Amino acid sequence: MHFTTSEENGIEILKVNLKRATVDCVKEFKDVLFTLIDTKETKKIIIDLSDVEFVDSSFLGAVVSGLKKITAIKGDIKIYGLQPPVRAMFELTRLYKVFEIFDAKEDAISSF
Amino acid sequence: MPVFEWEIEVDSLNTDDVVDKTVDHFIRELNYLPKEYLDEIIIEIKIIVFELVTNIRTHGEASRVKIKYTITDEELNLEFTSDGSGFKLKSDHDPFLKGEVLNPPFPEKYIGRYFTMYKGIEEELTCMISSSNKLIFLITPKNVFQNTNEIHEHFGLQLIATVAEKFEYHRNPDNLDVFLVQKKLKQF
Image (cartoon, rainbow over all chains, first blue to last red; front, top):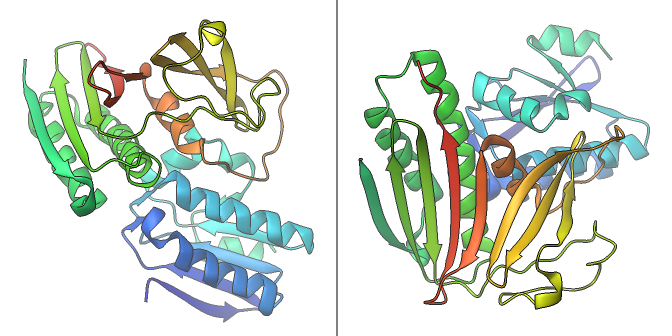
């Protein structure tokens, strides 16, 4: 499974079980993320990127699409576990100004 | 000057393989650099290669791609040449270009003109038509901070332009699409 979901304190944790989250997995990722938002009407999502060593623009685009969708229903997506190359992507794209990013899952959970 | 070259059929193009081979090459050739700086360079090279390969696989309609890397003491050059159908210059962000698609050879009246390709959070990707067959991509700061809600297809090109000192496209005399990316090396 490239993506797994679990629930903690009413928050959906979407874990990315890939070393490289890129264009090849974007469709599957969007299906999982959008199902949480559209079907389960989840308003609190944390994306766990702790296993991910690299993301590309397509994957970041999908995360932003999810944020746009969830913001429309007054929800939020938070992110945790960025390894240095992934952190660099969030910095280069200034997406760290759009998402709340945490080092520890507990901090991400308690931020909601 | 170390030169690394290989040619791949686009049908059998595996992005991960290309990236791994690229990373191995640059780590081998640049192992004299301080580790922290080398790690930084490798991340940027990965970004460039991932985005270029994705671009060729998804937009270029190419069947073959030739990859060439050259390294000097001052810079790295990454050149991707493919038998695609020419760069399609289009942008919903540019009021002048809205709805229009320009393909090389670019019309004379557009030469020297700058187009906004993508609006990022703090920067914009601008493209200048420098001749009938050449584009130069540039990152320019935005005057006003804006939140972005949507990422468009040129986001990948913006990333390349962000990490590179020079990012150009040209259609060569053999009707091949050439993307050239240059990264300057810090001197220690």
